Amino acid sequence: MSDQNQIESLPFEKAIERLEEVVRLLEKGDVPLEEAIRLFDEGMKLAGACNQKLEWAEQQIEMLVQENGEWIRKPFLSEEELE
Image 1 (cartoon, rainbow, N blue to C red):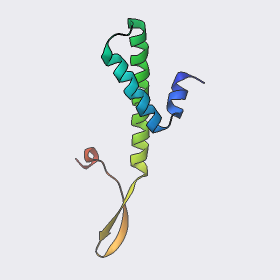
Image 2: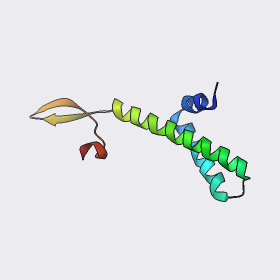
Image 3: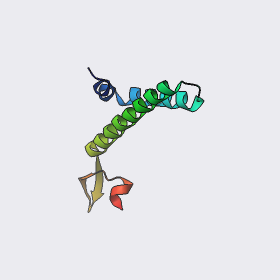
Image 4: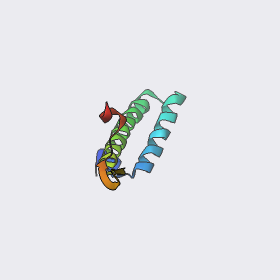
């Protein structure tokens, strides 16, 4: 299994935890250049995978709103989509 497939198969919470760890390591600034580049690449892949999972989750959410005394389903719209 490729690194990208491993990253994409991680649950969202695990991917976020690893991304936070990668950021901490890079912020310390004491990793060798080659390792920093590898970590940066991993972090970009993790961020992309997390973003995809969040977008998917937003698409799955429906809101129940009451209009004219009746409950109806409406799609969830993010603030960006409302603009």
